[in-house]
Image (cartoon, rainbow, N blue to C red; front, side, top):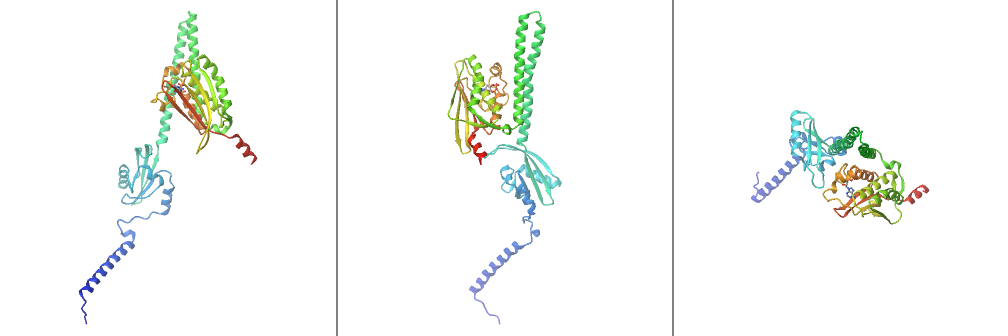
Length: 386
Ligand code: ADP
C-alpha cells in the first residue's frame, strides 16, 4: 500500500537528497585518479623537487599549462617568476621548446628594482618528457662585468704606456738632431730621464695593482703598529712637503694596531699623503689622524689623511677610485701621477677587510679615511696561553 507523504516532508526529503548528491559529487571529484583529470597538478618526483630546492641559481619546473610547479629559492627574486607564472619573454621560449621538443637559450637583461641591481641572465629551458619543462637561469652579470673591466684595463694600460714611450722616442730623435748643441742635448737628456722615470713609476704601479689582485696580503699578516707606519710615511714625505711649502702634522689617540701586510699599509698611506701634497698649494696643511671606533661589526682603526687643498667636485667623487681616473690630467702628470694610486689604496683596504672613503669639497680640501679592522695584540697572547 502506498502511503501519501505530506508536501512539507516531500520538500524536506528533496533538500536532503540534493545536499547528499552535491556531497557525493564533491567526494567523487576529490578521489578521481589524477590521470583522468585534464587540469590536475602533476605530482613531481621528490628527487626532482629536492634538486631544484638545492640549486643556487633561479630554477623552475613548469607543468603542462606553463604553471610553476616547483622553484628554487633564488627564482622568486630573479624577476623571472611573477606569482605562479613565468615572465612573458621566458614563456615564449618555453612554448618554442615544447613545440620543437628541443632545449632553448635566451640572454635576458632584467631591470633592477626593489633593492635588486639590474642583471644579465642566461636562461635555458629544456622539456622533461611530454608535460614538464625545466627552466634554469645563470646570472652572468658579474662574469661580464669582470670581463669588461679587464678589457678596459688593457685598453687603458696600452694608452697610458703609449704616451711616455712616444715621448722617449721623440726625445731620442731630438738628441740625435741636436748633436752640435750641448745645451739642447742636456735639456733633452733631462726630459728623457723624466719620461723614463714616469714609465718606471707607471709599470711599477701596474705590477703592484696586478699583484694585489692576485695575492692575499692576509696570508703573510702580522700585527702592525699604525703609529710606526704613520711616522715612516711622514718622514718619507717630509722633503717633498717642504719643497712645496706644505706642513705635515699628525694626531693620534691611543695605541692602534691592525693585522696585515705592513708594506701594503705603508704604500696605501704613502699614496694618500703624496696626493694630499700634490693636490694642495703652498701654505697648505696635511694632517694624519689616527683614531679607534667600534660598531656592531667590531673595532676599527681609522686613519684619515686631510688636506686643505683644491678639493674634488661632487660630480667627480664617485669615479675617484677608478683606475686611471684623473680630475685634471695635466696636474696629475706634473706631479708624477699615474691615476692608479687611489685604486691601489682601495684594493689594499679591501684585502685587509676594510674600506677607504672620501669627504671633499671643491676649493676647501679633502679627507681620505682608511678604515681597517682593529687588532688587539693582547688577544694573541691570550690565544697562545689558552
Ligand atoms: P694620480 O696618480 O693622478 O694622483 P690617484 O689615483 O692617486 O692618481 O688619484 C686620482 C685623482 O684623484 C687624481 O688625479 C686627482 O685628480 C684626484 N685626487 C686624489 N687625491 C686628491 C686630493 N687629496 N685632493 C684633490 N684631488 C685629489
